[in-house]
Structures are given as structure tokens and as C-alpha cells.
Image (cartoon, rainbow, N blue to C red; front, side, top):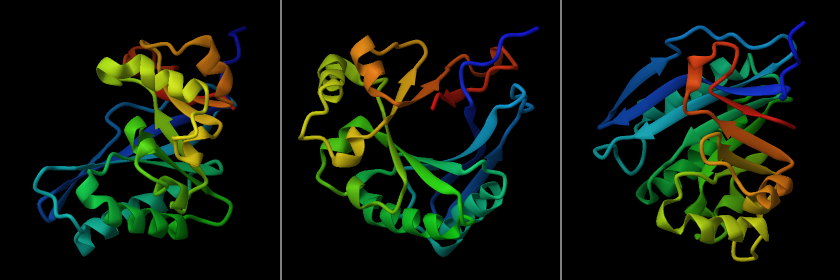
Length: 207
């Protein structure tokens, strides 16, 4: 008998959109989804802005993202995640998009968003997002990685309130300290080996 997985929900990339100029380039899963029995799907919609994307999204770009949210929200086991590292010039457009995504989800489906660590020190704008969860990404932090991790370990007051919540993102090849891991009631693990093991999703969370 195989051992039960160490997680109950799997956050899996289901659709990828690139905003390029005024266009939208769509991508989806290229490998089959094989989750262990009893593990619930948390769909992840990834959005990326190319350098030539407008500061304010075009109606077609906005509609494409919201259509993906609606489509995959129907399959979500209570939670959908939007993974969008919007550059500062698109921040207002991003905030409006998040609010629209929240409204587009079915009743009972919560909205999670990922956040770059440095976003957490840029005022309270993350606290004002229309989301249920903000997940700071605590890997690939550059030369000041240790300083960043220590700030999150102690829940530094300079971090946005939503960044001091129970959800934190880690990478399997860049393990957090025991103190930081203990602080995360909802750790998301991102596995850069992805589908080398078909029973292991590219990212998962352990409630």
C-alpha cells in the first residue's frame, strides 16, 4: 500500500497567459495531471506581462484573464490562485483586475494571489487587495536572501499585514529555516523538478 501524500491540496498550473503588446498569448498544461487519490485541485492561473504590454490592460487582455478565472474556478475545490508578477507600472491595473477576478469566481471559491517578497515592503496596497490570501514567495531572493527570511521569521512590522499571514511560498531546492517553516501554517512548496515524478504536482500546499 502506498503512503498517503503529505499534502491535501495541490496548487497546479492550469493555464498561462502572456500579455504582449495589445495581444494575449495563451498556453495550457502540456503534461497530464495525475494527483494522488484524495488530493484536491487548487487551479493556478499564471499571467505574465511582456515589456511591451500596456500599463492599463486592453479590454481583450482583461477579458482573457477573467475568462480563465471563471473557467477554472468551476473546477476549484474552494480556492483558485492567480500568479501574476505585475510590474509597478501596471499596479493600478493589477488591483482592478484582482477585484474583477474576485467577482468572477463562483460563490464559495476563495481567491489567492502570489506576491514577490519586496512587494510586502511597498506600503499597504497588498492589504487592500480583494483577495482571501496573499502568498509571499520566499525563494530566489538574491544576495539579501537571509535578511528577507529573517524579516519574515519575526513577522517584521514593516511588512504588509497580509504578508504576515499564514501562507508563505518556498522552493524544494531552497529550504527555509525551521523557524520560518514553523511560522507558515499554510506553506506552498514549489518544486522546480516539476513532473519528473508524475504523482508529484509542480507545487503543493499543506494546510
